[in-house]
Length: 255
Image 1: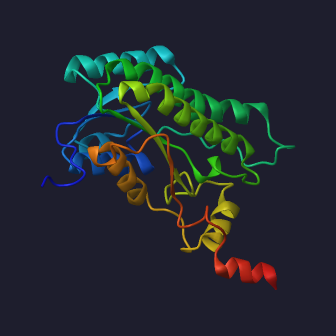
Image 2: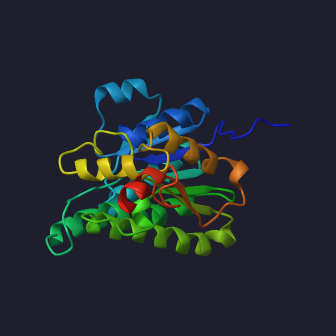
Image 3: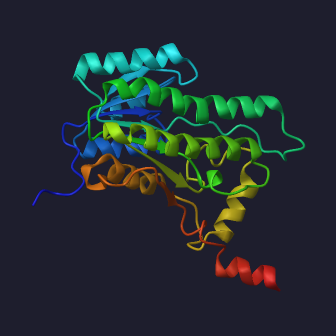
């Protein structure tokens, strides 16, 4: 019997893979012997030396840049087996009434439109049995106070995921989304996000936020052929947050 979750010689394009969640995903995929192409707009020298992968500059808000990325990958490897959309923007912590158009523009340009355009330009190079994995958010499955711009863009990612899963099913290309809570990365701890972290640590039934490696593990599964009949799904990595608030938070509110 073959070992589960095999990725040996799979050609994987990872959008946004040199920090935070993306870096954890990159390391996990490399450990599974995948041939990895990391795309993004910046990469530190340390990351490039640490990750044994091909790095290509690509900006998800620039359609020509994405087209070039996929063509370069195909020229080098002859196909794209897996696409992971991990580029993300968290722009603005404000109420709907206080939010600015620029906050919506920034979030939608990267999170929603960037995901759609990346899929558009990768699919022509993807054979039957390929997998597309979009990193969404638990904020794409429910309303989140002060994060209207982010939440609406992540809801859009789930709509793109389900629509692509239907449209690409006849090509035997699967499309799924991963929906974590806040993840323990520098971006989550940026100024303005402290109330969100305090709330999640209290409300999540497991009493904490996600670790990058926990998101990477689910991506690994979806990239492998072991998930060959999983399509159009939004998989939570949220410690039970989508199921309901923790018993401690419930009891405190009930007092």
